[in-house]
Length: 263
Image (cartoon, rainbow, N blue to C red; front, side, top):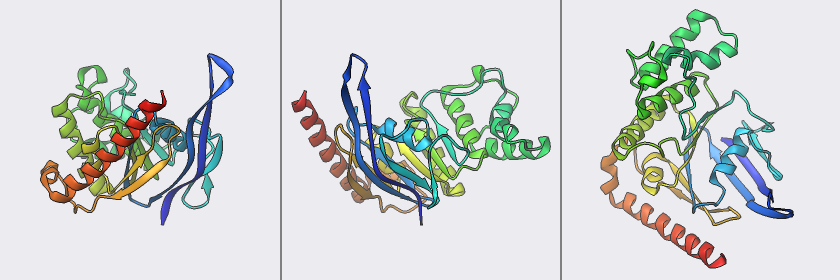
């Protein structure tokens, strides 16, 4: 069953320098994300990946088309059924790790004991047991993103939306976070829509990789990553991994070249 369905989604922005001009960011996006699917979206720079995610999150309205979750509920704004993890560390600096993870549960009106237990579970899941009473300023970048992931998951979202969440991390920390995310998804089976510019990251993490065209962004291809779980970075030497990566690289090269010719 499809968890998330996008039909005919397009987005046009006004050009601030010329109010009569329009910028077509997305055009006729049709996409179905299955229940418990880990889907990654890659595409050339400026193709509208983050715009698409913001529309699914309800942070940005589509110019036309619909986004439906759970078969019947049309998305028209933000909601607790979607959790969001950004590239920047969107933690409350005055709250401890525990209180940050509890935040959404407290807003829902959940009792103290229950929300503390849930928060502790997800803090343990992301490997931060012992840091419950630490403020974000004392954490590394990777640890801050672990807190952000735990906070998003604690609310039990129908879909976890991730916009290049590891893009600001150094290479070594990024590898650690990728493998952490794989293990968390394998245990939680939450539907994930993951935006990245890193082809290796997309193929390593996802069950399906959706390749977008140059602007205005369209879904050019869907590639199934038929590599069994559990996964680690050791899969990056497998022939099927290398083959999928090569196919994506060729498509993105073609799109980038075509975009450069249009300028």
